[in-house]
Figure (cartoon, rainbow, N blue to C red):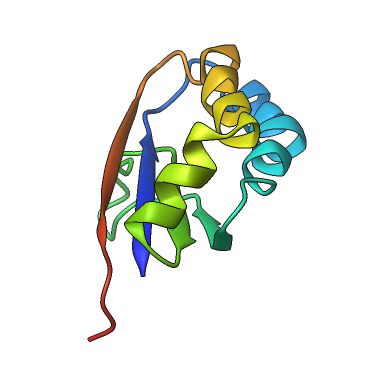
Length: 102
């Protein structure tokens, strides 16, 4: 299994970010060929009430690095990447790598 994990920084307008993510970006990303699983979490405060380091965490899973590369380089993957400036102005961190079950 190969994963793309996207960590979204806290936006200036969380409601606008969430609306765009849920209504536009997530449906775009869900069409990437080879995508096997796509999960999203919105972390809450820690036990002391502190804000989490990220507003949203998305994990996209593919069968292999090759499947990931093909999906992301195709029109659907490119459309999802091109959409990032429309809502993720606070920035993202993207991590890729092999995933194993422990």
